Structures are given as structure tokens and as C-alpha cells.
Image (cartoon, rainbow, N blue to C red; front, side, top):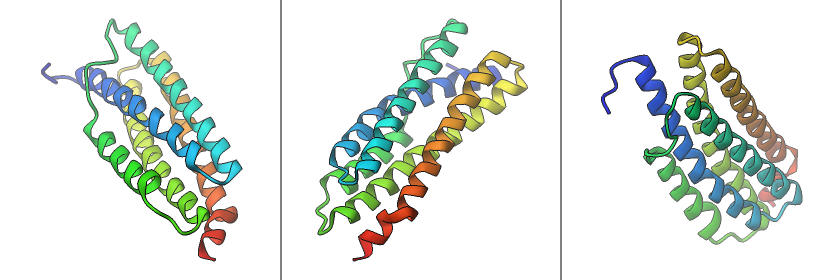
Amino acid sequence: MSIDTLEDLYLEQLKDIYSANMQALDITKEMAEVASDTDLSDALRAGADGIQDGITAIEKISEGHDESPSGEHCKGMEGLIQEARTHAIQESFGEDATRDAMIITQYQRLTHYAIAGYGCLAAFADRLELDNDLSALKTCLDASYDGDRTMTALATGGINKRAVA
């Protein structure tokens, strides 16, 4: 597909964020399983639910444009997933809280990728006057920001302090 217009770019980026979300869903669930802090595990499970909500939103938006959301493989997220698996799942840690701090680090990297993707898509939808799409994308963007803030609160609220010991 040639990307000639903002609409072409918009549709291509919907596929990219869909692929990114599909990849992020599994690693988020994996990190929830290895997290030792109960609040962190709960937040990661909530994050997985939010990612699933994003997948559903992108499917609905894509259907509204007679497009399939699949067909793209997000290599940027692939790299982030590889980093998360290597550093948060497979790495050895002396302290559980240190692993939890790493899990937060890796999850926030995934979240920041989503924030960038949803932010760009929302800007495109706004310019293209796709009000229904814009509303759904802003919901996804807000949820991503909320997930990021939750992780920061967990890190600064005790996990990082326990990791120092």
C-alpha cells in the first residue's frame, strides 16, 4: 500500500497500534505472573484489560473504514517485548522488589509507545474530522496515561524503596 494521504497514514497506523497491542497483551500478562508485589500484579492485570479494550476499539474503528486491523507487524513493539522478556522475565534478581522495579520500567516503556501511537492517531482523526474515531482514541490515550501514572505511583510509593535494600 502506498501512503499518499493523511487518511492512508491513519489507516496504516491503526494497523501498527493494533499489532503493538496484540504483542503487548501477552507480555503484560507474563509480567503480572512474575511480579511479587500484589498491587503491581493487580495493576498489570488491569493494564492487560486496558490493552484488550484498545484492541477492541481499534477493531471497531477499522471496521468503520472497511479495513482489517491486521496485516502489519509492529517491529518497534517487537523490540520492546524482547527487552521486557529478557530483562523482566528471564533475568535473575537477588530481590523480588528489584524485579518488580524492572517490571515497572519495562511496562512503562510499552505504555509510552502506546501513548505516542494513540496520540498521533488522535491528531490524525481530529484533522480528518473523524469525531467518533477521535473519541475512542482519546479514551485509549487517557487509559494509557492512567496506566503510566499508576506504575509511577507504585514505583515511588514503595517498590523502588524496597529495591534499594
